[in-house]
Every structure is written in structure tokens, then in C-alpha cells.
Amino acid sequence: MKRAATLLLASLAATLLTLTVAAAQTPGGVRIGDVTLDAFPDVRVEVVVPGALDGADLTSAFAVTEDGVTREVQRVRQASSADLQVALLIDTSGSMGVEAMADARFAAVGFLDRLPEAARISVISYDTDVEVLTGFDGDRDQHRDAIESLVANGNTSLYDAVMTAITTFPEPGTDTKQSIVVLSDGADTVSVATLDEVTAALEGTGIGFKGIAYKTEEADDASMAAMAEVASGSVAEADDAEALAGIYDTLAAELVNRFLIDYRSDSTGAVELGVELTQGGVTASDVRTIELPTLLPPAESPAPPPPAEAPVTGVTVPIPSVSAQQLLYGGAALWFVALATILALVLRPRERRAQLWGAAHRANAGGGRELAQKATLLAERTLERRGKRSSLNAALERAGIDLRPGEFVVLTSSAVFTAGVVGGLLNGPFAALLLAVMSVISAKLFVSFKTSRRQAKFADQLGDTLQLLAGSLRAGYSFMQAVDAVAREADAPSSEEFSRLVVESRLGRDFGDALHAMAARMESEDFGWVVQAIEIHREVGGDLAEVLDTVAGTIRERNQIRRQVKALSAEGRLSAWVLAALPFGVGTIIFFTNRPYLAELTSGGLLGWGLLATAAILMSVGGLWLRALVKLEF
Image (cartoon, rainbow, N blue to C red; front, side, top):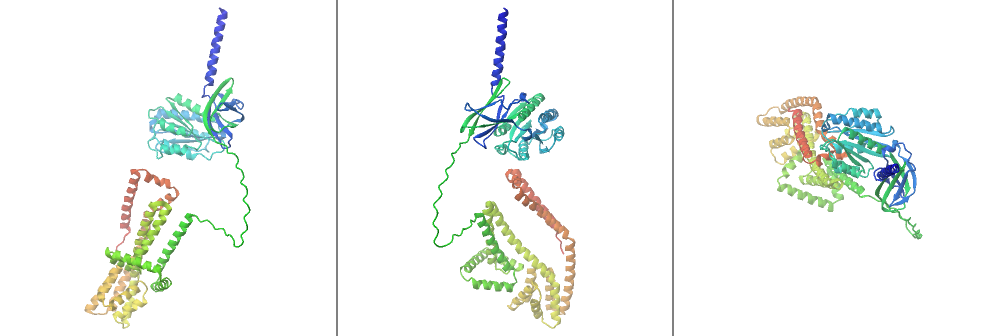
């Protein structure tokens, strides 16, 4: 009886031992992490061992196989804690609530204490916004205080938080282990980034991903699983505070208990890599399929070519290569130099410009000149058919631009074509259209600027011009002789306008009509008074010189008041220009320094375009308002 009991107890003990060893041999006790093939055929394998083996000497406890064939292990060492970088992401959205937030703070602090002091940690919270609470250069007290200060509020921006974590990691070293540990209780609701963008950013970086879905039916396990898949990570679920703390402890143990195994491979292509750990009579193993590169045989050195026969005559000169971009920039520069030369000729004084045009005509009386004349004639006919020639001619006359309407159209068309081609080659159709439109607008603004500056200069000269006219009359000149004296002695544009007045009068145009046309062309209210005074004198007689002196004095006083008011309002007008230009200037700087930031407006669907439209409307209203405030009537 006693013998039978002893045998029964021995059988039970053997059975329990067998079951224990079988359980220890099942895969999952160790896990194969990153496999480095940079120095192939030398391979480095990262192995995560169970937390129960903390502190054990495992340098001789590993065996490596490839397709079941044992490979010689060259070196085994535990990964340094100084090479460990962990970004701890904690969901602080309103759905967490007070109780869940307290559980998360407690478990995160435990995770923090579980990691070695040498590990570098960053704490990031995310709700509606993502906030980096502490960086990788912070100490444990700063990390702990940051975690203890977390409160639940707002929505969930999981994708933006992961993108922020990826960008905050410092440059990794050879053995650096970078991991993102994410706690989330719900699906993403407000992120700018998408799941595809996050997975693309994670893939190939070597950054690990550990996800924890906590205590809610709204947890987005699928999104975190997709991120874990590209980062060779994992996702775990926790239903209560105890499970959450346990998951954090397990993750900490995995991050700390990492061993690096170096061995030499004799295989190529897809192989089944196996790692087995034997410690204290217990065996644990893991298997993973990896793709090994193919070693190419060393290429044979090509036979040196036979020496070339020396050339009998001549010298070989190397021709430097020129890229397409350099050719493009050179062509654009030549175009703009040509346009600048034409503008310089247009803006020169008339006498000098006539000499230059004559010299150019004599030097180039061939096909180029003939082609320009044909283009100008075609533009003139087109303007005439559309009824635009007279208005454009009047605008050019007011601006003092000595070009025919057809010539101005050809010059502007050349500038538009050049800007469009350069913009299209540099940045596509949108840039081409933008530069072409800007060229047309610039041409109109140029004419408007020249007109306003010429009219303002004529108004400033009017007092002195009338004094010169009155002095000529007192000297015994007739009125036409006095006008001719002004045309010869006054400064431009007064001399130009009075010369035209003399020419029109000599060609038979009524003098009064010529004066009215001159006043309308210069849009000068003061000169309109002068015309009225001259007409009254022609009808009733009197001392015209005295009348002109009186008008000149009045005009001087008005100009003095006008200049004083402009000086007093200069600050307001400058502020209006700055406020109007500031959004465009800042937008241009951001476009060239951080283009993806602005791209969100056009890639964000109707919301982005709606914001742009709203901004355009508000800018227009604000511009009109500022214009009304600083525009002064005299």
C-alpha cells in the first residue's frame, strides 16, 4: 500500500514537471525584435526576454538557428539603458473622465519609475491640441510633475500626437532603441494628420509602437493596430486600473530587458530565424521569418584600356556641363534684361530717346525691326476693332509714355508671355498663370503710377508756371508768345503740355478747346480755374497778368495747405499700406519657408477654401475702409 502511494506521488510530480517544461518551451517567452543587416553577413538580432529574468546573466544562454540550422553566436550583450528613448503619449480627452484620468496618472508614474535612470523620456499629452510637456532632456521629477498635472478635457488628436512624437525624437545612434508608448481611450476626432500619413511616417524609421486601449467601447484598436503593424509593435487592452498598471509594467520590462545577439549568417533570401533562451532548466523561444540579402561575388577589375594614340594636332579642351535649370535661369535673365532695356529707353527724355531709336533703326533695319512693326500694326488694328485704341492712347498721353497703343500692347504681351513661361517651367501651370496675371496688373499699375506722378508734378509746378506766364505778358509778349516761352523755359511736364498747346493751336485747333483738353488731360482743378480766367479775359478784356498773379497766389496757398495735410496724414496712410500688405508678406514668407503649413488650406476641402474666401472678403472690406479713412478731399 505504501509502495503504491509512493509511485502515485512520483507519477504526479513527473507529470507536473513535464507540463511546466512544455509550457516554458512554447513560443512567447522571448520575442525577436529588430534585425539589423547593415553589415551582412554579420547579423544583429534584438531579443526581448521576460521580466522575471531581471538581473540574470544571459550572455551564454542564447542559441540562434536559421531554417533549423544552428549558427555560431559571436557576441551577446544587454542593450544599454542610455540608448533607450521613450515617448510617453497620454490621452487627456474629456472622455477619459476623472476616474480614468487618475488611473492613467498612477499607471504612467509606475511605468516611469520602472524604467532605468539612464533612459531618456518625453511626456506628451493630447486632447484637442498636442502638448509636449517634457522633452528628452528633462529629469524624472519634471516627468513625474508633468504626469501628475494631467486633467481630462477636449477631443482626441491621436494621429497628430504620434506625428509630434516622431518629430521630437533626437537623431538615433547605432544601438538606440526608440519607442512610442500610447494610451488612448477613444477614436481620433480632430487630427490634421491622417492614419495613412502616420503609418507612412512610422514605416522604416525603426521607432517601435506600443498601444494601450483603455476602458471604453470607443477605443480605436484598428488604427493603433495599423500603426503597430508597420512599427513591429503591439496593442493591448485594459479594462480596469489593475490591468492598466500591469500592461505598463510589462512594457517597461520589455524595454529594459533587451539583448543584442551578433552572429554570422550563411543563408540568403527568406529564412526562418529562431532564437532560443535556456535559463535554469527552462527554455523559451521565438521564430520569425526574415529576408536576407544576396552576397554578390566581387567584381573582376576590368582590364585597363590600351593607351590612346597621341593626337597629331590640336588640343582637347573640356567643355563644362550646363544643367537645364542653369539654362532656364540664364534665358529668363536675358528676357528681363531686354525688357528692362526697353523700359529704360521709354523712360528716357524724349530727345535722347529719339536719338537711341534712330541709332537702333539704322543698326537693325532688317527682319527684327520689320517683325516688331508687323506686331505693332496687328495690335493697333485689334484695338481699333474693339474700340480700345482711343482710351489707351489717352491713358498713355496722360502718363507721358511716348509709345503708341500698339507698341505698348506688344511690350506688355511680351512681358506676360515671358513671365508665364518662366513660371510654368519653375513651378507649374498655377505659377505661370499667377505671374502672367501679375504682369498684366503691373503694366496697368505702372501706367496709373506714371499718370498720378505726372499730374501731381504738373500741379506743383502750376504756381511757378503762371508766374512765368504773367511775367512774359508784362514784358510785352502776346499771350501766344508767353505760352511759347513757357513751353521753352518751364520744366517737364509743364513744358511738354504747353508745347502741345502751341502745336495744336498752330495746326488750327481752337485755343479754348486746346486749353480745356489740357485741363481734362491733367485732371487739375486749379488749371481749370486758369482756363476760366483766360476765357473771361478773352471776352471782357482786362489785365490778364494781374489775374494770373492772383490765381497763382491762390494756387500756392492751396498747395501749401495740401502738403501740410499730407504730412499730417502720412502716418495714417503708411499704417494703411502696412496693414494691407502684412497678410500677403507673411503668407509669402510662410510659403517659401514652410509650404506644407499653407497647403492645409487648399488640401483641407471646403473648410480651407471657405477660410480663404472669407479672408479675401474681409481684406477687401478692410482695404476699402482704410482707403476711405486716409483719402483726403481738397
